[in-house]
Length: 79
Image 1 (cartoon, rainbow, N blue to C red):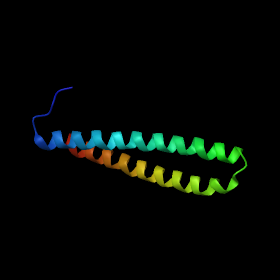
Image 2 (cartoon, rainbow, N blue to C red):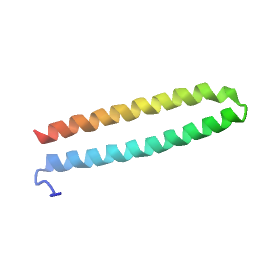
Image 3 (tube, rainbow, N blue to C red):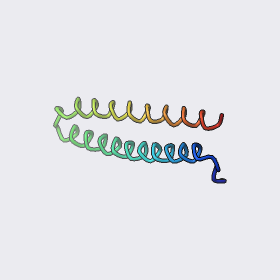
Image 4 (cartoon, rainbow, N blue to C red):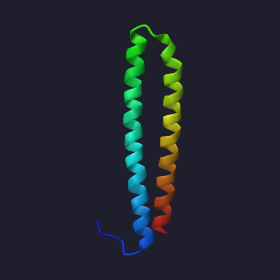
């Protein structure tokens, strides 16, 4: 891959890299949350299911919005 000479494109690539790293980090947290919630549920603590589901849904929305940001930025970069 060649490094773009245009500073705007280079900045867009940096923003995409940062957003993708944040998505990976949030997905790791979401997988940990799923494992912890399932472990607690199987241990008989049913009161943790709803907060775990709500937080997991919020993490999904954040990851989805970051993905939409990356796609939009990539489209603008290709123009």
